[in-house]
Length: 150
Image (cartoon, rainbow, N blue to C red; front, side):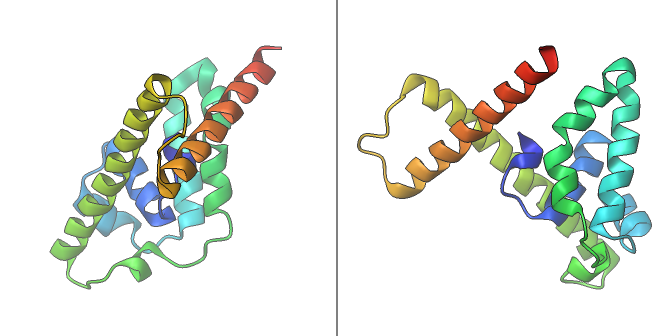
């Protein structure tokens, strides 16, 4: 769900490295700034899925929306920073990570609300659009899981 969410690619990459691979924001700035989102995305998938042993292929399948989004992105991470100062760049990395984390948390709460409030009656257009997006995402995940178990 995290990697299919409508977050900016550079924010997803930072989230992946800081949250899931437990890199420090300064480490991301120092070691990854010169790489492209495509290279970083591919590297992340290899490093992350290696932790799952026999389940690595299933995890790789779940990350497919992410790898599709980073494909052919040629700008470097450094080009996306607003500042040239390393400390400020580390702060940007932390903000990007928390932006994705906040969106995921909101989506999870929203999913819960779908179960509690299944109709769109009385909801405004952005809420309806977001529910439709999440419903289609859930349906796709369920179809994918069903296809793997058949």
